[in-house]
Image (cartoon, rainbow, N blue to C red; front, top):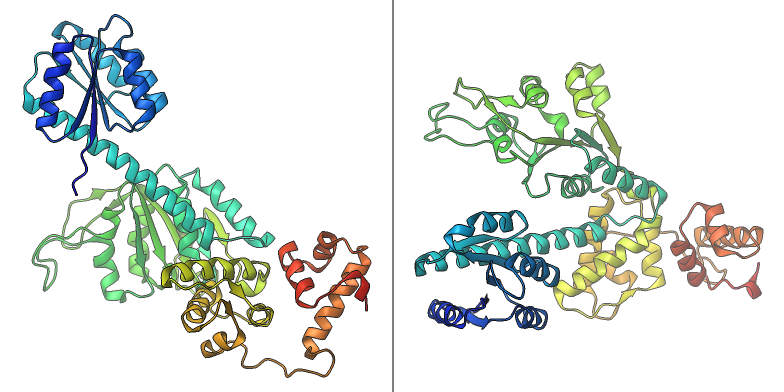
Length: 454
C-alpha cells in the first residue's frame, strides 16, 4: 500500500487554504488546512506531517516564527514558505533559518508538486541517514565490545583519532577487528556521510591491485574497452581503507605515496593528473618495520602511513572480553535463526575461556554461530561447541570435586585473591588482572562462598 504523506497548509485566508488543500489532495497527498498558527502547531504536536507550507505574512504569527516553532516540535518536518513577490527577501532569509524552499504567489500547480516532492525526498534522506547511523552505532557497540583495559584503550584512541583527518595504521592479527575499528574512525569523522571504501590488498592479485586502485582509461590494456573509475576515486570525500597494505608492490608503493602527499594520481593509460580528497586508513597483520629493514617496503611510505598507530590485541590477551562477546554473538544469531537460545552452560563457557583463539574474534563469532545452529535446547552445552574443534585437547577430569588440575589450580588462585582482598570481589579481580564480570562468572562456576574458603 502506498504511503500518503501528510502535508499541512497554513494561511490566514481561508480561500487560499482551500485551493491549496484541494490541489494537494489531487496530487495524492493527505492535506490538512489551517488559518490559525496555534491550531496548526497543535496538530503538528499530535500528528506526524512530512511538509508544512506556511504563508510568510500572517497577523497572529508570521512564517518565521512558525518555522522556528515547527522545527522545535519536529526537526524532520520540511517547511516551505509561500509569499508575495515583494517579500522574496524574507523567504530567502527563512531558508537560511532552516526552511526547505519558498513559493511566490501566484504559483503553478506543477511548481507546488515539484517542491513538495523534493521536500519529502529530503526528509526521507535525512531519516535514512539517521537510521543507518544508529545501525552503525549498534554494530560498533556489539562487535567492538571492550571490557578489558587493552581494548578500552584501543577504542578511546580510535575516538580521538576520528576527530582529525590524520592517516592511521591499524596493526593486529587476522580476525581481531581491524576493519571494524577503521569503520568506527570513519563514522566518527567529518567524512561520515562520504563513502567508506575497502581495498583488500591481500585477497586481490598484485597484477590487478593497481588497476583496481587507480582505475584505467579505454585501451590501457587488453580488455579495457571503456574508462573505469578506481577505488581511490570512489572514496573521494570519504575514507579509503587499505587492508593488508604490506602486500603491495614497490612500484605501487611509490604511486600510493604520491596520493597520500598531495592527492594526485593518474589512471592507467592516461596522462592527465587527477585529484582526490580522501582519508587513508591502512591495516596489516605483518611486521611492516621488518619489511622496511629488509627493503621490501618504502620507509617514507611507512612513516607516512603511521601518523597514528593503533594496535589491536589478540583475543587470547584480552580474555575479559570473551564472556561479553560470546553473549553478544549469541543474541545476534539467536535472533537471526529464530531460536530461543538464552546462554551458555558453565562448562561451555569454560571451554570458550580456555581456548587459545588463533582466529581471534572472528573465530569466536563463527563458533557461537555454529553452536546456535546445532543446539536443541535453550542453553549452549560443550557438545554444541565440540563440532567446531574447540576443547578437544582439554585435560581429563580429576577426582577432586570433578575439577581437572587446571580448574583446581584456578579455583585455588581465586580463593587466595579473595582472601587477600577481604572478599571484596572488585579488589580480587584487580589482583588477578581480570574484569569484575569474569570474576563474578568464575565465583558462580566454582560455587565459591565465604563459608567454603579452602
